[in-house]
Image (cartoon, rainbow, N blue to C red; front, side, top):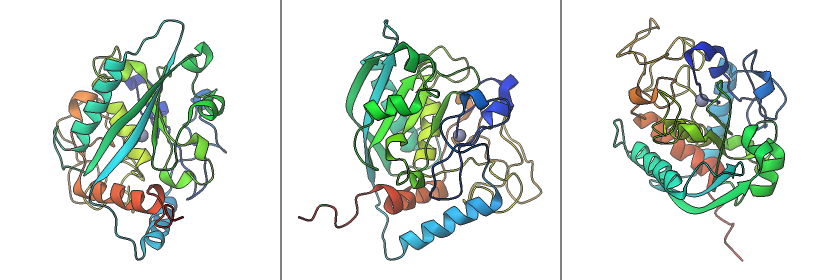
Length: 295
Ligand SMILES: [Zn+2]
């Protein structure tokens, strides 16, 4: 689920972590392997994989009522060089953008998901800062906090080929310490990353953390991204088109969806189906088990 950067590196932007359901893994587009997060190897989700995720989700949801509102406790880890690049105010601005995006204030639906900033940790480590992919396990082993329902958001410097990457909810059991989202500090609101500095990389990657696939997953083939109200899309959106219609099936490409790859200024929405899926994934994988609080 690494999110894209420059148009020239679109192959790398396709980089997606994926493994058959319930196993931690990483997948990466050819040519980006040096940036590949930890995991067994390159692979993008195939139609059968999306179907497997959906059937396992349905099995886990039997008799379970997903929550109507989710407040995600969030811990932000700012990795720095000797000079700190990201202020507390910048972190707060990112959280505000998350809350606006997930509330539908840029467009689309109110997803019923909000984020509560519980803590900011600051860690000076030039190696982690410059290569959070290569040092992923070391960094997260030291810094990761909480359980499956705590969002650990790491801010460091990725590469020109990758703006962020995230883990899926169903990876948690196999690799709890690797759970979380890593984003590039230059993509925060007002950051230096041209076309990607409204904080929407965080919105996109956290969408994966909450269980969403890309809208272009599987191209025009069934089951696409497994969401009914995001029409099939042949490939990731590049730049900022007003509209596109790349598949013969009904519906225009969801080029303004946060789970596509458009420039930040052209992203504005989640759909009702995506909101529902996030709540289902939360109930199945991230919220505390009903018996967890019993003594
Ligand atoms: Zn992604």
